[in-house]
Image 1 (cartoon, rainbow, N blue to C red):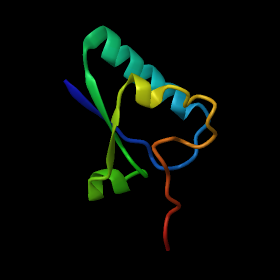
Image 2: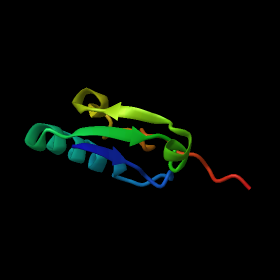
Image 3: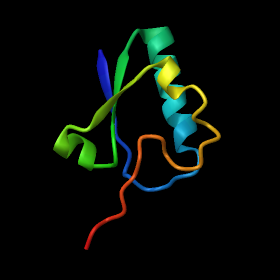
Length: 75
């Protein structure tokens, strides 16, 4: 099964740890593959994605901002 991961695009403490956890568990226990949508809703709207696998999420927990990126709303 292929799973898409989408965040709201804003900063959220602990979000990288959650993404890391679902990817690691999904890959090792269920054999899922993951794709991350970059920069909030810009990802699915513009097709901006990144492959999420165990090497891609390694070392992301101490990063302050979501590694999938974020964009401030435009006015």
